[in-house]
Length: 343
Image (cartoon, rainbow, N blue to C red; front, side, top):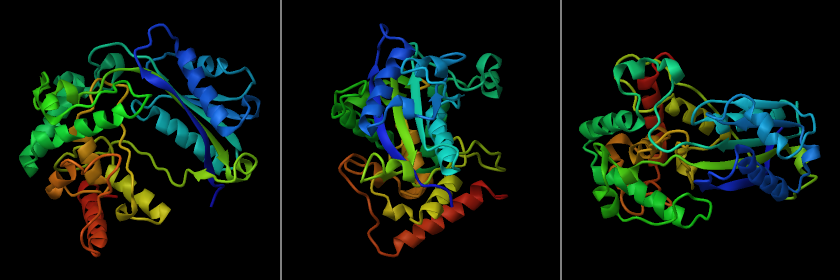
């Protein structure tokens, strides 16, 4: 077992439209906030990792250069929506493996207004050739498929937007800080049926930063360490038969994390589901589906999970019977076999 990894400090630049600021300026605010939170001086950071997508060659050098020029190795990481998550995992791997004791991860992006397409760049890829590379259209088809298979209603997906806007109203770093009602979401302009305007994430400008340390190093700065206990990453897999609803082997990755951490989905009190800052839309359908594949809900019984109070910052969803935790584990294993028969 490698060195345990500690989250020593975090920082954010508020998200929104910041045309007057450069990428480096956004990153500097987040980085300095993380250093202050950790009680660390930048000269003690041994390595930097920068997650970004559309900022061009050498963005990591520019962003870290805003904080200082100390000669540390800097790695640029581009993995679409998972860029900064992957950057943090690479830093954690390096610390766990004993290469570094103290590393900084910065995630930064400045985006243009309007719809963005999926992966593929100038070549487009097969989705572009099929005409389904615009995110609202692609996720609308996935949502329609889910509604067809399980009888899910548009109102269930819309509740995720209601939850997100409610949380945003409480977060000074959020781009939008106004709560919305279910009627507001459902009656907003249709973008790609059933996805409406208020069910789409905006493009945005902002930055985040985190200081990661080995457990031994962290003892110099804190007596109450917060551990980055377990992490996993993956990419899409070809699966015979019915296509999956999500990009990537999420069920399999969730199983790995649960096994490594020694817990099950019934032990999870808070689940934060990512929203794409690199693309134009994050339909609530997708957040709801992620709860299914990580075992927090079942496909056939997801609707109650999406009712008012089922998702949010102040509610915990638990099974009603003591033995349902085991049933949920069986569901995860069965779903994994169905989606990944060769795993």
